[in-house]
Length: 74
Image (tube, rainbow, N blue to C red; front, side):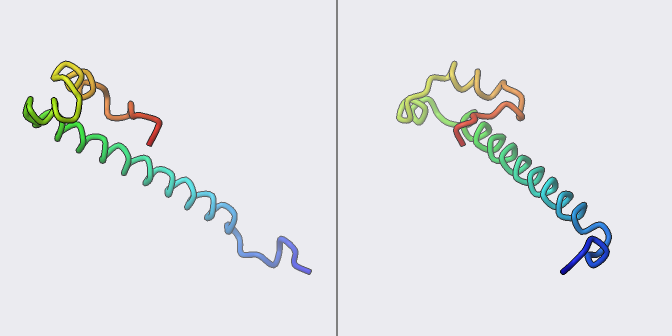
């Protein structure tokens, strides 16, 4: 039988901290990816945008959004 005295001090806190850091890293990576995709959209030609079914106005609207506003379907 183990008791709380048998476990190293701070183990639960460390796991929680790692979980929070992992979540922050995941969120940061998502924001970075969205930023990169928006840059690519801004630089796309009108012909490319037409091929993927977007208008220049839609691209302006998407690229003007703050980086933290992402599509939740990812």
